[in-house]
Amino acid sequence: MASEYILRVENLHKKFGEREVLHGISFNVRKGDTKVFIGPSGTGKSTLLRCINQLTVPDSGQVWLDDDEITGCGQKISTFRQRIGMVFQNFNLFDHLTALQNVEIAPIKVLKMKPAEAGKKAMEELCRVGMQDWADHYPAELSGGQAQRVSIARALAMDPEVILFDEPTSALDPELTREVLEVMKELARGGMTMLVVTHEMGFARSVATEVIFMEGGEIVEQGPPGEILANPKHMRTREFIGKISDQ
Ligand SMILES: Nc1ncnc2c1ncn2[C@@H]1O[C@H](COP(=O)(O)OP(=O)(O)O)[C@@H](O)[C@H]1O
Ligand SMILES: [Mg+2]
Image (cartoon, rainbow, N blue to C red; front, side):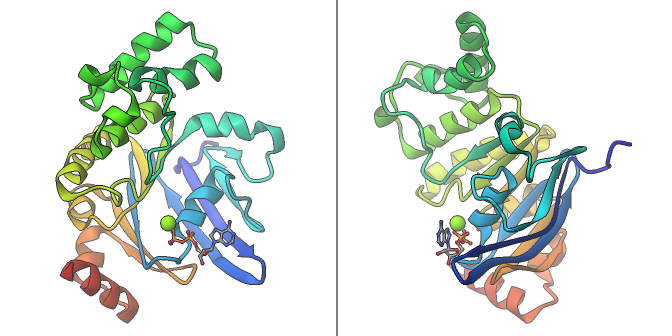
């Protein structure tokens, strides 16, 4: 029977050397959810996202996409990575390719789409993020906000079931942050399933279905943004939210 959740994370543990960075993380994601992860630097947020698509291999625990287990799937991991998009803080675009080429390359190479079809798809995704006029430009000619919008288009071009965003705006100044968050809000409102590590509380308030506060490799508290941000139960959550709200 199909699970009611599109993604399930069960009791993930990860050590780097002697240091345990994830202490048993579990949560479930429904189709169309936007989960926002907050927490101090070094808390394991990036490691958690990386464990979901096995860029980092967890020591124990399971990750399921629909009815398929990702953890321990061996060679099949490339199929899962097609189904789970990822957007990084530093864009990770290919410098020698134009915006359009950056977006169409995975559909051509991985999905074996015909170049004309991939080009059309890439242009549609560039339109979706408002970058259609910049299709022939190289990353060096784009602002950070524009580059990040291209990298979102690149993720969308694979028609992912879930997109993971790891601090997508933390390298950007406020104006550019805003244009990227607008694109992300549109995606969230359009029903995309998204896991987002960010400290942009306006974004969390307007589109998150749930905010998850992590500290020291654990989930301390989770709930709707109205509850977690306005009325956190745990002292540690309260202190952290106080700090980011003062900025
Ligand atoms: N590949 C790695 N090797 C060793 N230690 C790592 C590695 N990746 C992350 N860490 C450590 O794991 C901890 C959690 O890191 P990270 O997941 O990046 O936290 P966050 O994203 O919350 O800032 C940090 O102490 C970091 O130094
Ligand atoms: Mg991080």
